[in-house]
Figure 1 (cartoon, rainbow, N blue to C red):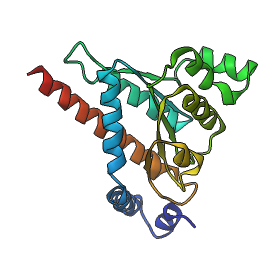
Figure 2 (cartoon, rainbow, N blue to C red):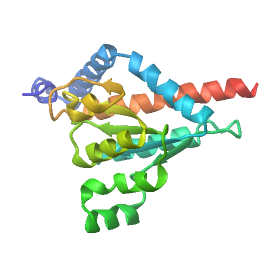
Figure 3 (cartoon, rainbow, N blue to C red):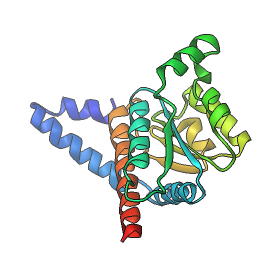
Amino acid sequence: MNNLSKMFSESTTSLQYADKYYTYLSHCLTEVNKKPISELIEAILECRKNNRFVFLIGNGGSAATATHFANDLLIGPRFTAQGIKALSLCDNQSIITAVGNDMGYEEIFTKQLENLASKDDLLIAISASGNSPNIMHSIKYAKEKGLKIAGLSGFDGGALRTSSDIKIHLETPKGEYAPVEDFHMTIVHLIGSYIRQMVMKESL
């Protein structure tokens, strides 16, 4: 029984479950190693300084997080002409379905990187399990191309945690998606708000 199932079995009302869920999530966030988060902020700012791209990838809920992250990086620091070139590779359904149908689903991100990415760009991969074939396929290509890899993972981290240069990880039982995806969204908002404040300070 994972933590969420245990919390549900111990709750007689949705209010009790909500209280237990937030207590558990708070504990998870407290336990996270914060140093890699700082490393990712510095890598994003380095891309901004050198006019490099930040690419984001993920599946399912993690695809939504990748899109949200790209939005906050691209549009969030709107106070200066020098923004961040951030792009979620999850968003073009024509490309994704064409590549998935004609070449295989594991290629959906890699084929986009082949046409868009350059050495010293940054690839942020978001995956709870860390073992999605299309994520790992794109990471293999990105490493060969000379991109830096940041991985946001959960469970035991999987292959993504092993392969990433920057490893942002929340250790949870396998299959416990909700707290992992909540954690990943806190990373999006933490980093987005920090960079926004930095850019505002530059504009003063």
